Length: 135
Image (cartoon, rainbow, N blue to C red):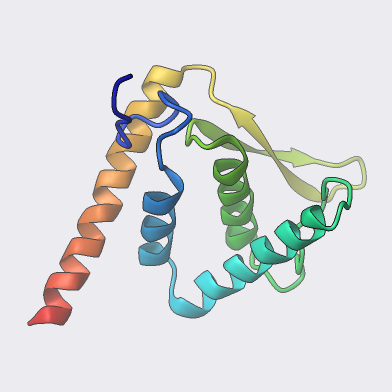
């Protein structure tokens, strides 16, 4: 069995992509926004753990800014699938409301490379923040 390469999401179901994804997410969002996002995910997990049917709405949707709603959907997709090769597509409902769908990327190799580059950039932000706080 070969070792997982977290820089290549989706290659190995056993790869830990959630940990690095959460660290990158924490680096991108300020503390309050990250905590609000995590609370929404915890509510969803509790509902699903209690046997509720899959949730079709973002918990606390009125409290989460649209960009956090997208982050919520991405985070849930990573938690459910264990990989990063998905994308969000904005949809319009018949009543004009906007929503999002999570879909698998059509070109996994290109998506993996793009995601790897994005994660590397985010990890650099974390390293720089750690270096500046240590000074």
